Length: 333
Ligand code: UFG
Image 1 (cartoon, rainbow, N blue to C red):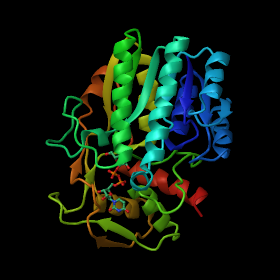
Image 2: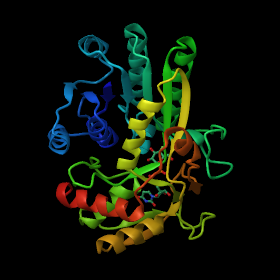
Image 3: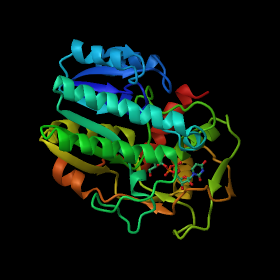
């Protein structure tokens, strides 16, 4: 298949490109490098022996995006391009709504115009809000989102669902990611956020390289075994493999919703301990106040992914910690 990956040089997108190429697909990428680097394209080539067809601009530029649809006979889209920092989204809601919603509308409109029938959308467990029960199945109620970033994900899901209803030949797949961490085992691809990281693993990586002094653990009085927040961490390569299966197996018309998580929850301190143990690096930490908007526990029921996609997360917490550190040592100093 010929697959357009928007945001294809980003953290998730770059791993998706590698897995797509390795599964025999042709890959076209649009990215404006707003949160990634051009070297990623070289790394994808190094890992796969193949080049992606690359276009540098923001998908919001409809004329340029339309040219990509004209120049390539696309079979599927994997739509990863979006702003994704929770904290930043509170300060820049207009930018978040404009970028994330408008780019989705541009893609949906061009899919309709050019008869491209399949889209896989990078959604997030954030759409479930504060869960009433865990593990979360796809049938769980959608919850209140607590920040503009999360709201854009919920709205993008809604937009694509409505578009599918209006264009019944379309296949819309909403992949709800839990907490992607880790990096490609080569150490070439991974997550290298600009500035002070918002997310746990990038922060731990920067403490491990000694760029940052100490991890702040946001609250130790949650109703969890050790009082710190529990999440379902998933290796980014497993996540990427889920996308390849999704474009191959969810090609039938309809809206397909699928969680991508491991089904296991780890606390913040579990992750700190695992990282220290696997990598032999000390991670100093202090307990801080709870972070506004955080929830106690969130993990997936991954049964549907297994039944419908034949997908099961293969990499455990040790590999996630090892690969994150391997990437950090090479790229984050
Ligand atoms: N945490 C810390 N210290 C930090 C950063 C995080 O203790 O410096 C804790 C958080 O309080 C939470 C856990 O580590 O308990 C995970 O936090 P992350 O910020 O890594 O991830 P979140 O679960 O808050 O959010 C992530 C993504 C969102 C996505 C959401 C879906 O960042 O994009 O998962 O559940 F929407």
